[in-house]
Image (cartoon, rainbow, N blue to C red; front, side, top):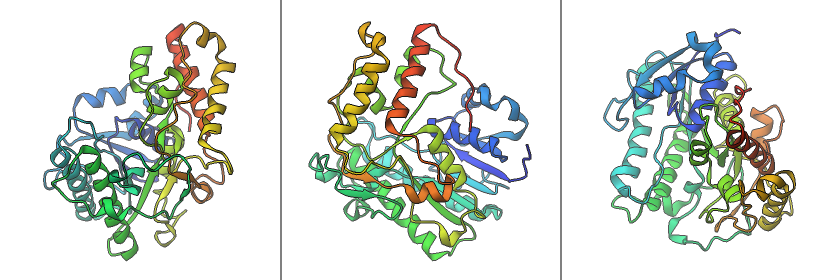
Length: 366
């Protein structure tokens, strides 16, 4: 396979989305520079079964602190494309300002600065989040009616975008940082004032297996919140915006780099990485359908207690009905995103294989 499509820098390359972006980009013909924060992450990535045919097309850069000035300058030298995924999850013990808001904003600024200095960058893709579409001050009042549309032109929450430190809670910081970044990057995209184009991706809850994990305990820790809800009846999540398989999510990020397929003036406000919500479906019907699938297809595993079906514990806030058809047409060749049911089924089979006989996980396929 030709590697003539250019060099892509992927930040957070050892994370869930990042690793799969590395794999998909290599399979699509790019060379990849994996940008990580720790030296030991290099061995983890290098051991991936799907990377083995492409090791001569992979290189690494270590950026221990992406918030210091010029942090990414060396890592982005000579690259044609950047996928900026590295971020912070709003853990309850994190300081809202120092551990969440400032790191998000400063790392974004550093990526933009490094891309300008490199002089070779054609497009930068930023990973965002549905948190930028809501205000944490709404609490748990958004409900599950899915009465707003999440599409490629959904509006940022202005209240969150206006938040500045000092901030009250980690979730205020997360919503605020994401909304500010999304708003700022959209303005840059629209101005076309940079020597490269910008695209942003709003992923749903990312679901799927990992070929880097070989045991059930590690798999259970790795699983996303929705899979845990369905398979282990864990407490309800606070929010859900959309649902996407990790392979589909990676594909959106990498296909969004192609400035020939989608020229700068055709890039929408954001790409939506998540399956379109079926018309007329309520959240109860969606959850019942998946729960019934687990009970029917994994009857033995439920009987012996491997799975405990969480059929009624849908998220507290599900404010959006997803319409990602434009993303599907422009980036996925018209193919539909894998559904929530299909994602949970895949995760259940994967976990069952690890918990049962420790069967080998097959390499990823694009």
